[in-house]
Image 1: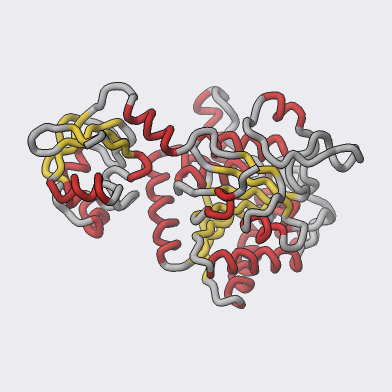
Image 2: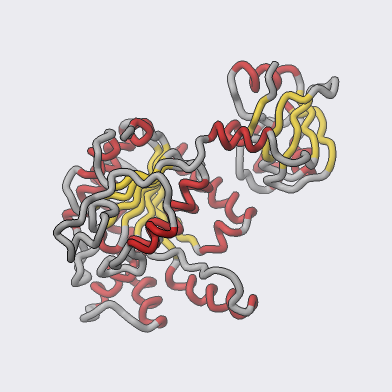
Length: 387
């Protein structure tokens, strides 16, 4: 098995579940959390970009409020989340600060990543935090998310899949996709996926690599983290989502000392789910996809940057925009003579691109009122023609 992709990952989303952040009796696992923060800071000092998705607000609120058991009613759970989130973030700020690293709180709900405009705002915020050398700490906004879920289901007649993140497993996967991460690490209270439940079956064996998250694999998983809402099934569902987007996923222990650092150093730890498709395959799909909705006409400097440096297409290289298209739709890249140099997925609509023609990336926010991307077409979403 090849773990070079894990060791080479530069942008990493690390998810800490409730069973990692707290003890079963809801006490905070301070020693464990301190070790994990230290590991994240080590990665940060290596020049790797790390985004942390942390559960634990409800458990922290339970402890602060002195409740004897985890709340089972919606209202009490939301109250615990509201109380606990501030205390949890204060602790993260202290732990990271002791090691000379700044941390920032970002609270999200499902709709923040389901709506493209809101997702662009989330991405912009997280990108700026990473550029500033800050470690973002994300969590689902539990105090409002269930209310919005109920309202959403009422409006849609309960149609469609549930929108809960599932102990932040789904949130971590969607953040990894939105941020074009190289790797998603899901830390849990067991060292990966096993052939059977390791708590009840002494013959259970760890699965080092899972090439495909099949329905059979989902059916085989059993057991739920004691303090959380997401068991191994939700972790595999998150892994499948990220893998299909071209992101590798590592499910490993957040309890074993040194496991995170060892795993990200390329050691055989946990269960690795490789990307279902490499980004080259993604580009082939772009190149051979359906008809383009519009065209981006670019200057010679942009053509050279695209072919010679494999760069993204920046707005300063645009000279004209043809057709009408929405964000995320397929467009052709052409020179002034009409020759097609490639195809890609537009980060901005045709109307927005026209306003950006010939402008610097630093001007995007002032022109559009937001800046989801510095590029009009990112290099990961660009398939060039042969020259």
